[in-house]
Every structure is written in structure tokens, then in C-alpha cells.
Image 1 (cartoon, rainbow, N blue to C red):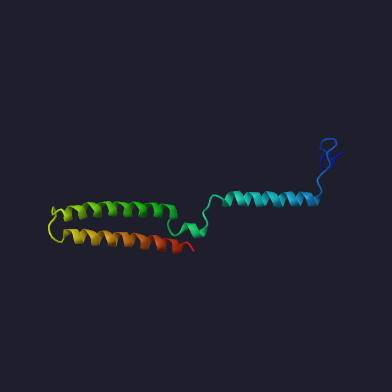
Image 2 (cartoon, helix red, strand yellow):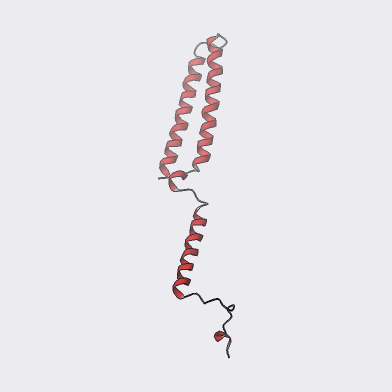
Length: 112
């Protein structure tokens, strides 16, 4: 008796049919694919740079710009700054904030 013809199943357990075996293989493949694709972000959320990182950096830039603008505006209102400095700080902060938001938007568009 050769090794290939031996039945090594446990007593009372029927061998799976070919159809059942194919179905189990398909389920395993789908499960493996879904588990491996769960690690990656969808293209809409990704962007050219990781969207979460860009959003965090833009948030910090805008927050710092608002704080700096508020401090310089108060100093300008109370007369501790020379003429024209307050306007330059306000406009510079506005440009930085708009540029950060534009970069965030462009990064998200590259992800689509």
C-alpha cells in the first residue's frame, strides 16, 4: 500500500468535497486581502503626503500664526510697536495661513 492511498482522516469525519474546499480557499483569499488592505489608507485620504500629517502641520502653523498675530496686534494697539509693524505682521500671518490652507487643499487633490 503506497502513502498516497492512505486515508489519514479521523474516524467519523468526512472528507471535504472539492466544491467545499474551493469555497474555503476563496474565503481565505478574501479574508487575507481584506486584512492586508486594512493597513493602507484609501487614495482619497492619502494625498501626495500623508493627509493626517499635513493636517496636523497646517493646524500648528495656523495656531502659531493666530497667537503671534494676537500678541503683535495687542502690542500695536497699545503703542509698543513702531508704525506699520502691526499691519506687516497681520498681512504676513494672513499670507502664511492662506498658503498653508492652499497646500492642504492641493495635497488632498493629489490623492484623488
